[in-house]
Image (tube, rainbow, N blue to C red; front, side):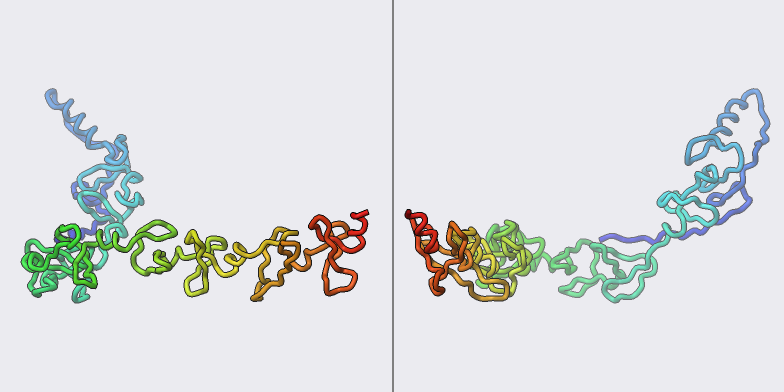
Length: 326
């Protein structure tokens, strides 16, 4: 708990009174003084100090100003926060000059009643409260002295001690969030995350939204095809023996038969569900890749003159087959 005391808002402006603290004052070029035999040296030193600029430590010879009991060159008198040169209106906080924008204090609103807070207020975890609005979420009493926060709720010390729980796994008193399992066991956040396991893709603890696939867990953002990286949430997918996840098309490419001629997978074209595959000579071919090795004629037993006459298990047309056997 902390009390935010309102900062006195002091608005200052130029004036000719050189003795006023917090006001600009033109410095005369010369300072009249009366020397004496015993005090002349001391007066000179005091005058030198008084004429020294607080900002740059150089001597102010003429045209300076005073503020907060200090002497400045006009160009050295700046906002201590944004460094903007102060020319007319300025403010002070902790004895430092500030421009109006940097001094401006944001209006505070009570987190309970949503009404503006004027003057002193109470703060907890960045939230502001009227003193009478800051109450225990269990008994409703106004909080004074020690209090605790649990699950973002304010609790007085008495109720906190009565409601605090111990983790059934590690035995520690739970000071933050806790989880109640199906068997009514209470566990701390650390042990709960251990139960969740790690994401199969990134290795980090899986919490929040979880995808469970074949005994493994995934963050939704991690559940993508290992080849094309497209998200597989809500769409068909396949797993290989190494638990790698593929979209349907990339899985077919990986596990499809390879053409013996072009060495490319035999898979359906985009938008199609099947692909033609020709099995000949103990090997697989795209139909258009099954050609005579000598003349390049596409071989097709359904077309007269395009039949295959292999030699040494190599596909050849009739004419090239005869030539090889001569």
